[in-house]
Figure (spheres, rainbow, N blue to C red):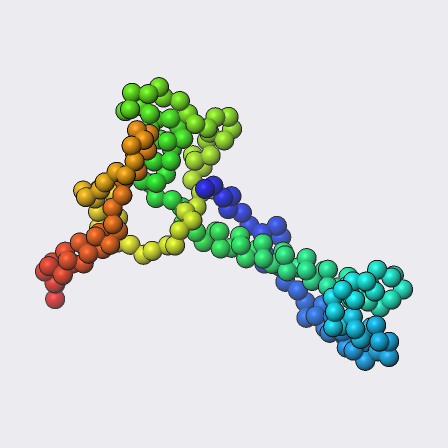
Length: 191
């Protein structure tokens, strides 16, 4: 999946001043202390606040505007948070990227006797060539080089499909972990 890594629109995480929250608190306090029953009810029920906020002469209009402004700030914050998390994701492995490129570029058909034809054409055909815009949507696991080597060249793989274009093979990742653990245990320890 291609996701564009970019900075938040403003270039930094959105902030809200304490004065903004102070204004909201004061408006809420005024409504609670009000002699007007509907004003007090507007603090308890969103529906009442929105109904009274339609009247430009009522104080609820200002409270409703502040609530909408806060909602916008929260949305902006959520977007910035999502972008920050996306930036932290690592790119896909070379093996996965190569498999996708072969499949989408039509090279996967070459060994099967079928005519080679790309699956995606036009401007989108080069989407996998820009590696800085790609992320792997998986949990990052700290792996050593030996585990990666074994995983990429694991002998005990099996195919579960009859599709000649699907070169996917399956193996149990736990077997790689066990093998690395056994070899580490058997390896001479330096003192």
